[in-house]
Image (cartoon, rainbow, N blue to C red; front, side):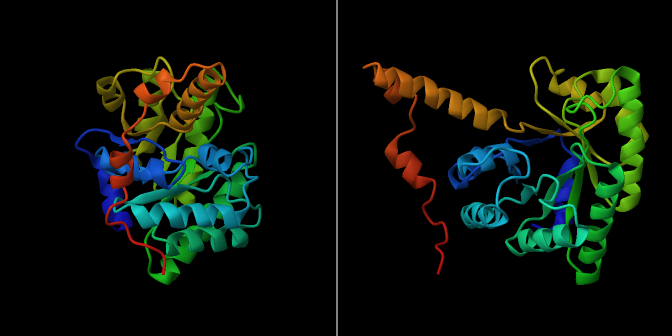
Length: 270
């Protein structure tokens, strides 16, 4: 699927729901359940490879993981590249080009605790490279104003809109605001960035799907929540087993044939 067609998924019908994957099996499972696209979670992917979240995953590990995921899915893939694993826009462009070579049609790239100026330079460099190559890429700019506590209340909404305006000018296609959780704030941000689609993250107490849609949200992702839930469940089952109780482990499991069947017909590396 092209980046343009992936972008069209943000226009409905309904919200684009992205349960974030962290490895090949989670991606293939999510696809098999009917997801229209697959997104990665940087945190879950880092943990799966033995690294803490926060731009610490070696790029070789990221590329290998994306290659594994792309091999087993047919749905469009968008990759969380955190802050690009570098401050140098040229280095970020090289990484994004490698991700695109593996078949990704979208990326998330964040400002984190860094300067909005730096993210603008990265987005602009990526957009210029993509345009010059004749390729397509959906760039979802993530701002961490709320996650980092950079501003609060109405000031936070103003800062989000200010950054979004700059990221749009630099060439992003969507805006991701993790931590944005009230209908009024969502409506204010979505109105200010129209027609750029607004992406929010599932958190406890988030408004209903209907309210999200009415507030201008077009994309809802789980972030690391599914990976955390899987780790939490594994912790519970493993601790029970170590205490001599293992019945729950079999009650919660997918059948062997069903798990194996997820990969029937998947391509193999040559």
